[in-house]
Length: 128
Image (cartoon, rainbow, N blue to C red; front, side, top):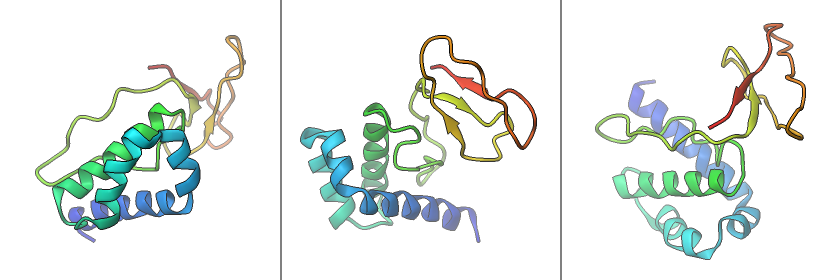
């Protein structure tokens, strides 16, 4: 599978998550951000830059609404290279090795740092 196919698969996976959680996401994101982007994702050409931009907009809006990892768009690659990603958001602790998708949300200001079961290391605090 080439790089383009991998990037396309990431977008497909993100849209699958969008599809499975459409009602909850629509409510969290709000109509002003949801409506124009969702219309492009629903009706647009998945090979077009406009379609990928709309998926990224929904991903960013989901993160801004408090969903750790947005709609799962792990790679924000579009045609022509790697655009800069959104600024990191404080969501809690993540795997220190980056090998799993575990996220432990911080509960309170002085919560104890959890330990990664895989690497036996303290998890990394994401504090953007």
